Length: 302
Image 1 (cartoon, rainbow, N blue to C red):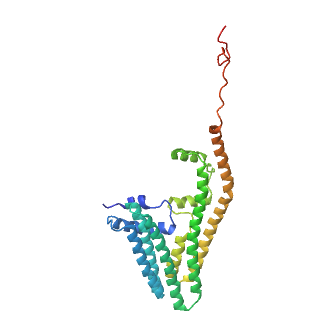
Image 2 (image 1 turned 135 degrees about the vertical axis):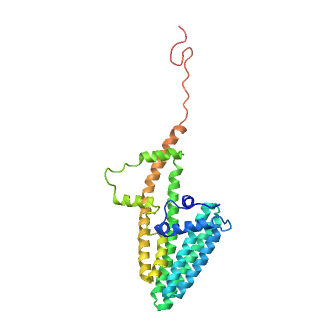
Image 3 (image 1 turned 30 degrees about the vertical axis):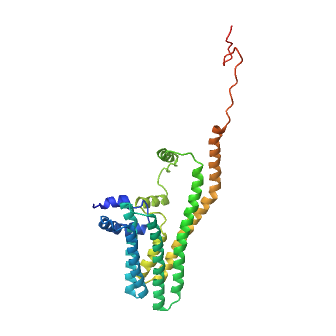
């Protein structure tokens, strides 16, 4: 059964995503998903493997290293990324995702990026005999691995802190929690909101996350923009600087959250103890009235 583009957008698009994905990948990927969705044999794993094959083609052109080969490699790398984004959309649309598929997608992504880096910078070294390309290859691979490991570890730390707080909180109805959060939210100042808030709201309305230079943008600049412009080293340096700047920003936010966590945890523990105190207080038996006297103290005889 055919699905419409609107159904694909509603069922497969992430609420927020990288601006490169939103602007340059999703419009094409959604139309390709519409073409292949009726064919159930085209599973997410098949698309992951196909994306890897296209990535191998990009590696070959990167290794050739001349001007037109670099452009062809860049276009194939972008197509490989488009197909790689399709696997998640097909999984959400058809309900055919698997845990193994998640592992396969992650591993082949890293393999593709590593060998594309070797082919791109190694090919340029062969073309120019400039050892700077070998240094850039090491930097590119290191930064890609760093941002993945850093992202996973930061998510793990934040999840640990969140679970500690949630374990001390009473269960709440989701609708009531949402209503309470809305009531407790600070009112927007009268007049114009800050420029930062306006920009953030505009980005989110268009599904673009405020983390503007993530690993996705880094890879696209290194393997697409640089080769297309014939400026592999300068673009790699700029992309690396942008990635490190945003990663440092995230690390500083994590540091602040970790510094605030002990106070938040202590407050949650105090609130938890206060809720438990009434239920754990021992029951004091009521004093028995004296014979011939009612519980109110009134004699039963005249």
